[in-house]
Image 1 (tube, rainbow, N blue to C red):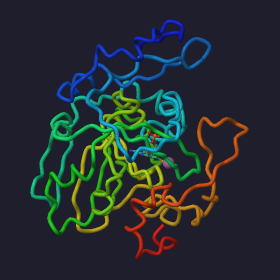
Image 2: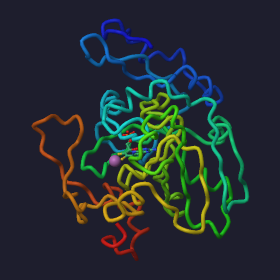
Image 3: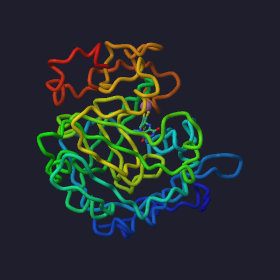
Image 4: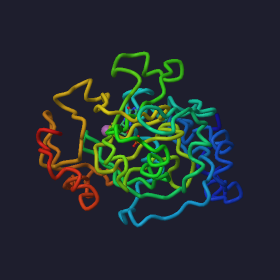
Length: 319
Ligand SMILES: Nc1nc2c(c(=O)[nH]1)N[C@H]1C(S)=C(S)[C@@H](COP(=O)(O)O)O[C@H]1N2
Ligand SMILES: [Mo]
């Protein structure tokens, strides 16, 4: 593991374009990236380490927010990824050596096209886009993250789901050897999540493979994770190995764990409190300790794109 003092890091290591990659080279990028973002330095300070390889051909999106993104440091050291521990700083420390190559994604269920695909082949047909989205955790903190991803709608359509496909289910890797958190019964492993097919094909839903134009760090869900910005963060499942088209609503990890606290829909909603805390306001990470908690927006501010999906749903009952 490389440990560097901040003064040893040349700006070129962070911004160099010499190792820009085409999507075809993504597989090598992941191998180079290794996942590392930060390592504890002398005296316990956190100092920047090598960042993942830069991604090329990343388009911009009108769906991005113009709010200021959180720093790379905030986004990659304050994480929820229980497979690597339940503390916010556990994932970035414990996921450094997580192997995301080779990586296979299996697509099954009610679709014309199914099968197992190498990560590279899986993402190759799709355009990489930057999507700067707000992320609102159910724990009442938030961030703004400049994801790089592919459209989930495009992915779903490419597998030609049949009329029986009413939901899309996702599963995280099960590997207790690499994921120390899976040796403890905090959740039912593997982590599973799901969306309705309408949610999965909404223009906002993406599968993210990068952050800040670089290969996504392990702690953020490498090599590929879901991002559904109008729902609480726990819906955005990390390190996906299986995508299934189902007729029935699939089980979801936090709902299994505490059904009275976490529903299937989990739309960000300041009007429906968590049984143990208010959801009316949120703490923006990086805003400083004296900053006021800011009001939480319904659907995390994405109502224009998604409110129609829920016009006939009682959001108190289907929380
Ligand atoms: N497999 C898996 N996916 C997960 C989680 C997890 O523990 N395991 N945590 C979720 C929660 S609660 C949040 S808020 C987001 C956090 O994503 P980030 O660490 O990239 O900010 O990931 C979600 N996806
Ligand atoms: Mo969360």
